Length: 505
Ligand code: ARG
Image (cartoon, rainbow, N blue to C red; front, side, top):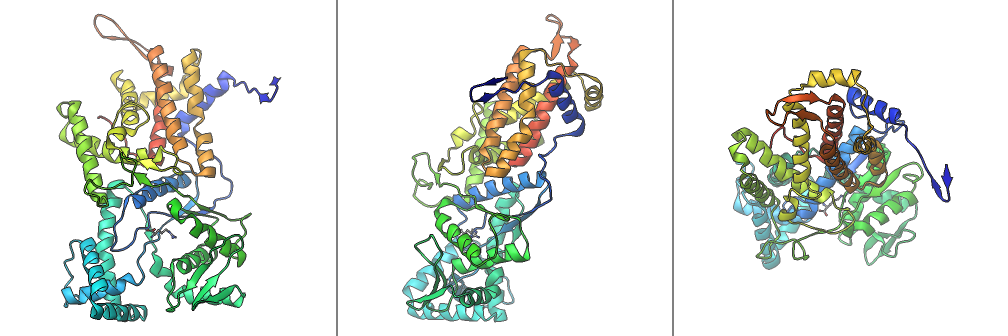
């Protein structure tokens, strides 16, 4: 039936019911994608010896989740950590390393705090003329691949790498390291290719490339002959397109770098590396992280927040919350620990993912750990409660599986019908995110699913008990199946968001 401007679609109950049975029997199916394509995701990408800050945390969380979504949908995903592991800063770091740990070639230098080490060398670079000169020589020697200097560089990278890995382990994030250094040898050819095609202009000793539509050119060679962030991103783009043969390239980097990426992509198109009608290249930008005062996220004393400290604070707050609810009295120590990690890391991730990534976002432990509203804490509790319904009715998985095959899912009650339809929307939500890369849609959906479930549960008895004795008198199996279908979708949703639910919390 058509009304003006609308097409009304009426779903048949038996169709929805069959779809739900199939979901229970076959598990959650990803949306159909056709040919298996290769996705290259550039995310996290912190810089060696510098602070891995909350911006990198955002990129890490969002990027990981996008990878999980594409993997579930059947894409071939390459997760790249484009580390800032090359550049002139290594000159001063190596010069300082030589002074502080002269025997670094034979004894691994015990650099505990690389940040402090960086600051020291920077201070010397700015104040000591001699040191500065030597730092420049170190850069030259490193670039000429002198083994002792490569060794020093590797040692410094290793210290950072270990720090980054701690964060990745906590957050259960996997990446393939392919930093800027990887592209160094390709840059000469990149410059030549642009020169050969007549795209290079010399300006004040620099080699620049103007790209149609952009007023500021890319600098591909500095006046001292060195390469830049632009050059390495051009090399990376070319490599991802022509060597890796990526069909979809995604860069999860803060919005501040938007012009940089748009110019680099346009340059790649100009020189003929790809056709945007065939290859999809996206800068999946995100806003800045703000403190509760709506200013740039800082510690009380005004320093940048160390990510490990932040994660530890999350753990502490999660434990306080669990103890407030006296969960420590019901859970075993192992269960409590698992719940703590699940809540802490789940909440930090969810808080980020549930906001539209394009906006700035306010980091607040109080909000993210609140178990009311659209938070991981709320969803995790909802999930454990749903999972417990069947268990408390003494229905085990085997019985549920059998019922899924044999029972018809009745959807006569208005709330059963509403829940059933909500459950089936999941693949279409995923399809939308594969297109626009906005993960908050998934969070909004899971929240809606949880509240729709609550409406259903409040109105429809799943298990009927005798008022006096508390004995179970009737189990409404088709409703338990609806619980099960809800939980299945939630579990898959959590998995894509990188959240680990627990059996008991
Ligand atoms: N290391 C850069 C930063 O910290 C991010 C790199 C992003 N990826 C890229 N291909 N440029 O800002």
